[in-house]
Length: 66
Image 1 (tube, rainbow, N blue to C red):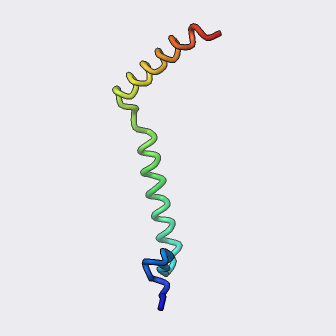
Image 2: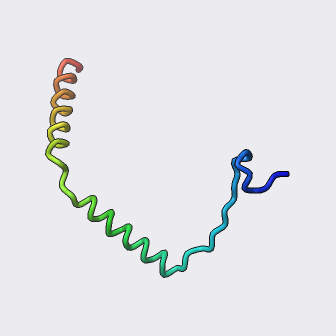
Image 3: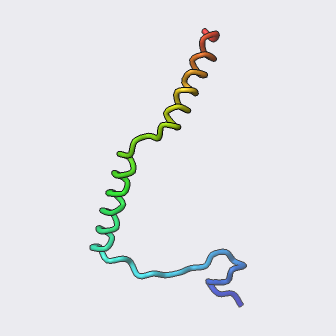
């Protein structure tokens, strides 16, 4: 008849044992380190140029609206 893993039902259930607390902590620490490294990277020059162009367009467009 139907099982919990029947793909037609769309509610397949998979059970996994929880990760040990020590492993969760290590994963969390590595994720934090990766995030900190990412946010400390400089913005690429091409993005700075694009942001400057957008700002200039915004300033020009708002000049006549007051």
